[in-house]
Image (cartoon, rainbow, N blue to C red; front, side):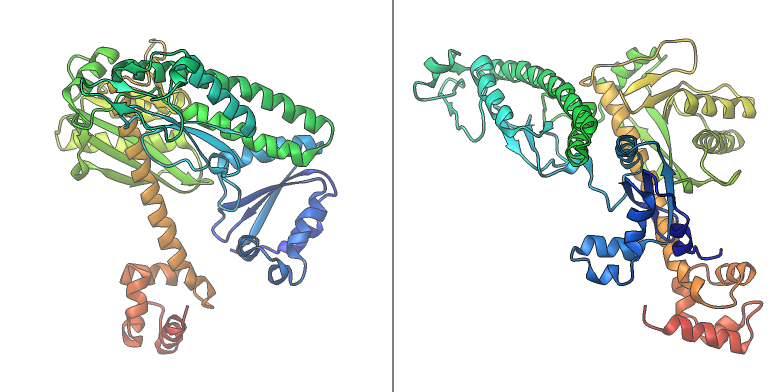
Length: 489
């Protein structure tokens, strides 16, 4: 592949508003930005000595990583602002701020693991079982709202320490706050948790109310051409949208209860109208980066628990490019064709990560095999909606439903397994890319090297004589490659 002439590309950019996408040498989008003038903004990255004079290490690293770029021209700067945010949400480039981890704004955290859960403020969202609300840009309004909730619902804030009484009940306060707040002060943990449930529902509604306010403020700022303010509000809007999308009902946790139990399987059977509890469930997921390194995973849960000996991963063979539907049709067909050939039973339930299109692709693979498919559903991420391949309407189970939570664990494990495989392939490609800088090494010789040595690590460890055994490599060529690979990275 011919190297991209970035300076030539920049020279022909229009002096118009738009969005630019910076890419690394593997074609991955690493940064998305907006510009009032694409030509002026993008050219600023490639001024002589820019990487050395920039004070921020993150920006220096970005400039050094840029190998290619794309641009999208739009009609106005407000349109560029909105498109930039949409693309950042879509691609999540490594050098853009992650909207879901913006430490400038406050979150409300409620930990269901506490016997008496309290409402705390934090700026960091951890990967735990807590429930988070926010982020909120108006900290003063948030603190006043929490104070109002304490009076209205009788909940605990911050590090307040209640007292457990001999009869097993709790005394929330030991001062006059009982009279001030007007709520019963001595109560059971169960009664208190009912208060927490009600407060969480209120706070979620308040979050949606604030979301509409922020959207209005963002539109007003863009209308006034206050683009920096509009961009900051846009970030908060997206972060709040993401938090509301992912938020879960308050869970009553029992640490002694196993994650995959018969109750979840039984309830899933009832919800999906299956003939029996689905003791064997297989789930498929597709993973790619901008249409490259397209792979798929299949994970299996037996009796509600991961059955890692029966996990499978796939590289897409039937086409090159980005088509999730074709990829899903291929891998589902490959999996169950093999089971048919080996005369092994199908699982009790097949779960597809996706919606109607992915379900249709999976069903098409069974039609191609001329076999009756097992029970088949899709799980669409946005609202955790269960999609059926027949005329049944989509199903939304309560987020506390043990059957849905089992499906979520299954889907998340398939996603993790697919992403791990994708990362392994990218890492291997990066290691192999060192050969791009060795002159005279065409596709045939490269293929011969990897057919003989199977990995770049084994090739690095090979002697000149061993390299010379590969077709197309004489003594001089083998010695040159050996010296090239022996240089420090």
